[in-house]
Image 1 (cartoon, helix red, strand yellow):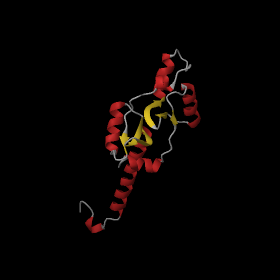
Image 2 (cartoon, helix red, strand yellow):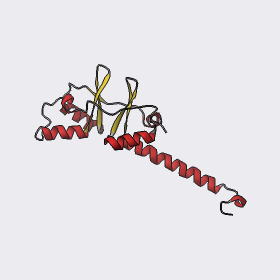
Image 3 (cartoon, helix red, strand yellow):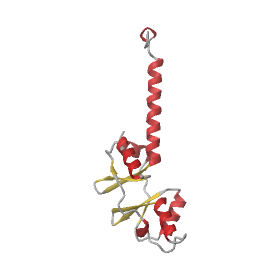
Length: 150
C-alpha cells in the first residue's frame, strides 16, 4: 500500500496558514475545524507545519499566553515529507522515528495532501481486516477432501 492509496480514501482537503499570520488565528482555525495541524504555505511553497505540539511549546515559551506570536516563530520549518509513491511500511517507520504525527505529501514541489498517524493506523487496520476476510472466505470455501491436515 502506498501513500496515494491513503489519500484516495481520505481525500485531499488541506488547511493552510501563512507564516505571517498570528498564532492565535491559526489556533482558532485548528479548533474550529477540529484538526491537529496546519500546513504553512508562502508564495505557493511549503515552508512549515504547525501542529498542536508546536502550539504548546510556543504557549509555554510565552508564559502560558499565545500573545502576538506569528506562526513563523512557532512552526516546524523543516517538516518531514513523503511522496505519493512512498510505501506504507516506510511511512510507519519514519513517523515512529521522527515522532511525526502529520506528514505533508509532496509531488516534487506541489503539496498533494497531509497524512496523519491516524490515517496510517486506519489503513493498516483496514488492510488487515480485508486480509482476514479473504482468508476466512478461502478456508470456508476449501473443499472438504482437500482440507489442510487431512
